[in-house]
Amino acid sequence: MTSLLVIIVLVLLAVALWQLTKIFDLTQVGSNSDSSQIATDNDNNVQGYLMFGFLAFIYIFSIYGLFAWGPLVLHTPASEHGSDVDNLMNITWVLIFIVQAITQVLLHYFSFKYRGKQGQKALYFADNNKLEAIWSLIPAVVLAGLILYGLYAWTNIMFVDEDEDTVVIELYAQQFKWTARIAGEDNVLGKANVRYIEGVNVLGVDLADPYAQDDIVVSELHIPKGKKILFKMRSQDVLHSAYMPHFRAQMNCVPGMVTQFAFTPVYTTAEYRELPYMVEKVANINQLRAKKSIDLVAKGESGLDPYTFDYLLLCNKICGASHYNMQMKIIVDTPEDYKKWLLNQTNLITQVKTAAAEPAAAEATSGNVDSTKVKDTAAVSIMVAK
Ligand SMILES: [Cu+2]
Image 1 (cartoon, rainbow, N blue to C red):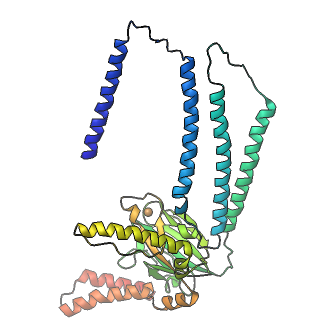
Image 2 (image 1 turned 30 degrees about the horizontal axis):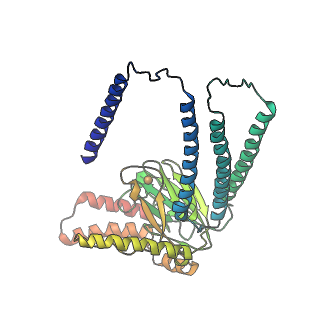
Image 3 (image 1 turned 90 degrees about the horizontal axis):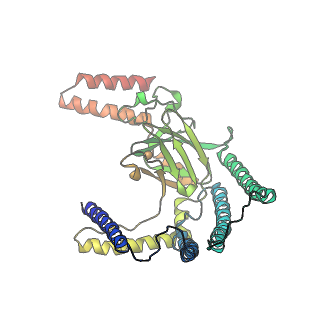
């Protein structure tokens, strides 16, 4: 409401100013002011110096931005291929910076130098083949180099050898959460279809598929360090995008198809937390949180907990109202810890069986058996038996 009022006030102010200038113009009628609409030398000079002013503004703002927001970048990549992505990004930035620095100076300087002067006539200049060749060839060669390097990096990152020893994990996207499925001992994911979604089987895994028997469904994902993880992505509803910024990985999750991305984590969560840059970053965040907590406590609310770093899987496609909160924690363990964690997980089949047994047992003890539910439970047991 307040912002609406502010907008109305601003619009009314603008209208008032516009009316005032009209009144001012009317008072000038008859005086010998220049109303010819043709730029005078004075106008051209003002425009010329404004050009310089704008040039200074974009340079000062760029340099300020580099210092103010430069340290906020992601820093050390946590995956093997991450440095390739960073290199490509850095090369692109440096090129853009050089080209922009040169072209903006030339653009603004020449606009100033050749600003209009009374009585001066512009030179008619049709073309210059040599010049055109230079400014077409240089960008063409530079861009071709950049694109080729990008394609080389992309194929390198995306290529997964069929015989390679990977850990296969499914990432399932839906509005607004992630669920992961580990392929288990056979390292093959069981078939899945949205029609099989029922109860705890939120991913619609085909429980009759032999490959599904050892699949493990989790909402907080652990992965081992130093091993290639092959992620297979699916979506239940709309386009989502699995984004793991610290691993420099992103892939769209498209309803009706399976997409994939593979990477090898190089730091465990514990190791990444100890990196000097991360220690400093977390300390800064916690300083801000402590400050904020003082205000909150003063207002009678509870303070903020200290922040600890964790790898995250985020959604990077605006997929609906709670898109901003669509995330899953990823924990990179040492291979030994990963094995221990895996041993403690219950596979999906067992989860389904337990879930099916629980209501039946509860109903049997209460003596109030709902025939439809018994049928459902029986159906699940048959599927499991298959
Ligand atoms: Cu999403």
